[in-house]
Length: 188
Figure 1 (cartoon, one colour):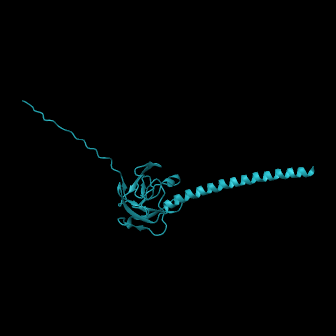
Figure 2 (tube, rainbow, N blue to C red):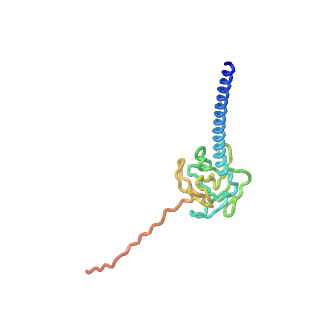
Figure 3 (cartoon, rainbow, N blue to C red):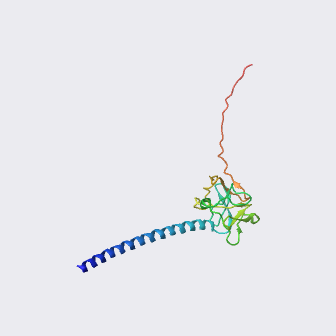
C-alpha cells in the first residue's frame, strides 16, 4: 500500500513539475516575444534615424526637396523654435529625427553651409538645415514619397524642406473659370 501512495505521489509530483515547466516556458516565450517586439520597434526607429549623415536633394511631386541617403524626404516641424526640436517621445516615433553619426555630407544641390546640429533633450545631436531640425516620416516607405506634407500633428504642421531650407508648402490646386459673353446690341 505504501508503494502505491509513493507512486501516486510521484505521479502527482511529475504532473506538477510538467505544469510548472509548461508555465515557465510560456512565460519565457511571452517575455522573449515582448523583448523581441520592443527591440524590433526600437531598431525600426533607430534605422530611420541612422540612414546616413548625407543630406541630398531629390525631385518629388512637390518639386526638389531634401532627402536622406535612402531618398526619404526630410521634414521640418513648425513647432520647433530657435533651432531646437519640440518633437520627442511619441512624436519622435512617428517623425524620427536625423541624428548625427560621424561627418555630415551635403549632396548635390545642398548647401553645406546650411547644415548644422542641435542638441536634443536626450543629449543626442540632431542634424539641422538652415536652423530647422530634420525629421523623416514613418509612413514614407519608398524614396521620394511626401506623405507627411502639410500634416497637422503633435501641435503644428509638418512640411518638406527645400534646398533653401524653407518649408515647401503645397500650392492649392489652380482652378480656372471660363465665362462666355454673348453679343448684346443697345439701341439709343
